[in-house]
Length: 93
Image (cartoon, helix red, strand yellow):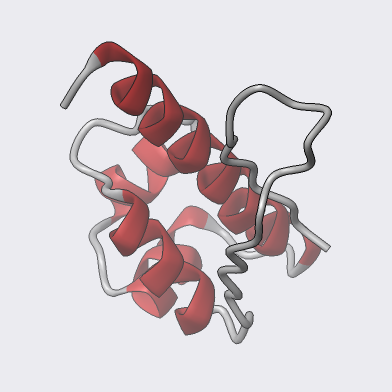
């Protein structure tokens, strides 16, 4: 994976982690309750809460979102002509 793609993966992962943490916060789940809902142990829930993302792939974070009853939608579209390159973004609604 080149540096650009690695950077994009980090951004996607961070955005997904923030979305997961946002749902957990809105529901006022403890780390133990969040861990049970996500199917991980409490130390993993703590790492996620502190955005320590080693060991969390983008795919795994998306699975966590669906475990929290969230829909995950991936949309692929042409970039505008005004921009030189395509980009990856994460938007939590």
